[in-house]
Each structure stands twice: as structure tokens, then as C-alpha cells.
Image (cartoon, rainbow, N blue to C red; front, side, top):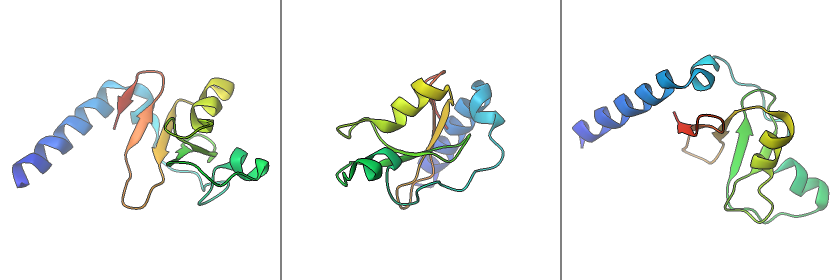
Length: 102
């Protein structure tokens, strides 16, 4: 188990070093709408699969497994490349440009 954990950390570190967008994120903004997708909340919808937060501006959107895919829409609209999972117990990041996880 310990070896797998070290190997996983090494792969994540290598992926983050290979992506300039992931490595450029040194601080995290506060989430604009903690615990809910911003657009879904505005529409009165409360059914999404998982939430992602933009590490450029703090926008919180629903993931691509959700019906409206607001996190990806935010990237397409703004060009902000790095999102982070805001699910309890998760801290992984995703770069839409380089399609990498860190």
C-alpha cells in the first residue's frame, strides 16, 4: 500500500511538472458559491454529480458527469484552464488545456 501511494504521488508530481498551468497555481481563491454550482443555483437546479472550482477565479461549476457541465462551460467561456475537485476528501486538479491531472 505504501509503495502505491508513493508511486501515485510521483506520477501526480510528474504530471504537474509537465503542465505549466498546473504548476503555475500557487494559491487558491475562495469559492464563489461554496457547496453548489453557481449556474445551477441561479437556475434553481440542485441536481449535479460533482463540483469543480476554477483555480483562477473561484467559480464553482458542476462536472461533466452532471447534466449541464457548467465547469467545462466556464473554461470554454473564460479560458481559465485549471479546476480543482471540491468534493469532500478530494484535492486533485485538472488542466483543460493540457488534459492533465495533478
